[in-house]
Amino acid sequence: MGLYSCDRKRVFESYIKLDDKGWNKDSLVIFHVQLKDTIRNNNLYVNIRNKGTYPYSNLWLFLTIGSPDGAMRTDTVEFTLAEPSGRWKGSGIGGLHDNQILYKKSVFFPHKGLYTFKIKQGMRDNVLPGIRDIGIRIEKTY
Image (tube, rainbow, N blue to C red; front, top):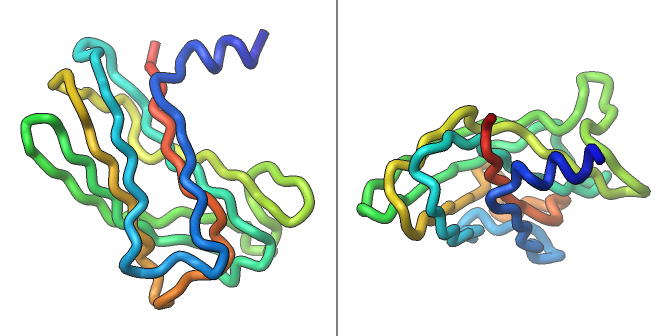
């Protein structure tokens, strides 16, 4: 029952698998999302799957949202993936840890049409090891 109610909220959710060698600083993860509801607000989540070998406790990302009218908004955001003790946050089996982190609450999409979400890693590594998948989730607020 709980799973069903969570899925009723879902407007969009998808992951993109990153290169096994690591996430290049110049590589963009891009999601194209067709949105039709211009009345209801939405919560935006960033989904991050990291291996236990990820060398940091945090992850800096550059997130850009492009709307159908051509407007673009870019944010620099830090997500914490591990507790100060070193224990990984999120759920996990084996060496893989899954985090769904609230990025923006109660977002209004004013135009129907195709929105583009671009995510780029903002760490100092040219090739960032240990991040396996990046995803986004958009869900309705009630």
